[in-house]
Image (tube, rainbow, N blue to C red):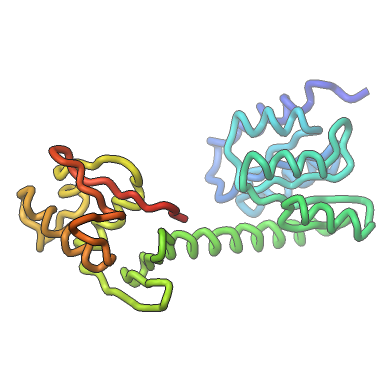
Length: 254
């Protein structure tokens, strides 16, 4: 009979060794096949992947409360909740990448898993080296997607390219920004719908072209409004909060 405390023991054992070496990636393996799980934990360590193994959904939730993981390797056939149910729950809670494993080769299982939010699917038996390659591919794709999202931030009818430091309108019009204008807009985007004092904005936008006095921020806001087409008499994006500072009131940011 399998030890019901095995999931927690696996978690605690893995966490105790986390400081012993430098890890590049942290993976959570959810599989009730103990020999396979232990083999994968040892094998992934060769590639600087710290793997924590658990048996079922309860162990998975416990591990996720204790630690932050870069990827979850999730078996389809599990005691209690199956992998599809756990995939659905996990995707509702997090955008962590999920690689599903299954001994069943039915195409419908693969399709359902992908529709529920799994990033990839592998059939058992498999070569451990292929699992490493798939994990690396998933993480590279996720990193590239997040970098792209970070490089291009949309708000209202604009897109800000943080690499080129350009504003791009829906019609394709490109509006270049000075370094100070970019820094000011960036802090507005990071703190939307919050009143920011002139001192806070000055610290964020400070550069060689910015002198340390309040009116410099007023002039910079005025220039930024002009580039955004924000009516200075009745601004909709960068609003003045009299006596306090400014508020960035974009409807949608993402």
